[in-house]
Length: 316
Image (cartoon, rainbow, N blue to C red; front, side, top):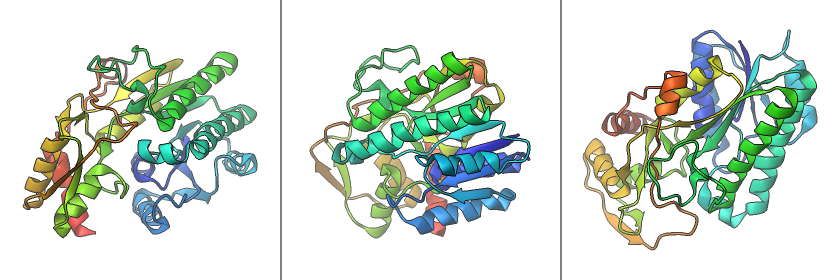
């Protein structure tokens, strides 16, 4: 297949590109190198992805229709599908700049959808997030749960993106899978994400900041399992569907820090601070639907995933 991956230079995007190239797909990447974190890290991600095969990459912003048109026009015979991962990420940064999150995540997604419509490409994977579940207290989260009460601008943009893609399914016959990722981690993880920050602080002997008492839980999902789910979804696109991609098990933040310390063979120094607004207390996914319809079966336990991650972190 000929696939356009937006956000190709990012953590998940580079893993997806490498996996697609490894199985023989023709991959076209797009990324604007947003300064949220180092451009060099993203360029290194692309170099790593290209070890699996030639990646046809363009630098540009998904909000620019001319750039998008060029991506579609440049593909001989046309694209088969789009994996739309490009977005501003993070709950807390979205509190500081909600208008920019709305512009990039909503306007950007609308521009991608319109470019697809103009060029007759009707197969789409949309990267959503577990944050759409908000403060829902009914665990595990199921895809049919009510998700109309987000508690951060980031979460709102992801839910709105799901709604936008449904419009294009309804009006233009797009086949769309919205994939709700749950706390992805692993090699090449963004430097702002908790597991990487915690690990770097432990290595440097600096305190690890835990918000609250550490009892909040997350469904930590190893990157290879996320990528496997994305590719399974791509190969089975049919209609409009929403899936959780997760490990399906929750672990407390306090326990995560303990496991990281064990993987790094160092004792973490803990510093506690007050919880911040917008953070969800607990996440855990019901992955039965993805198992039935995608054959999704995550295989990496947190202990093993942290060993793989810390081995990579100590190597770079």
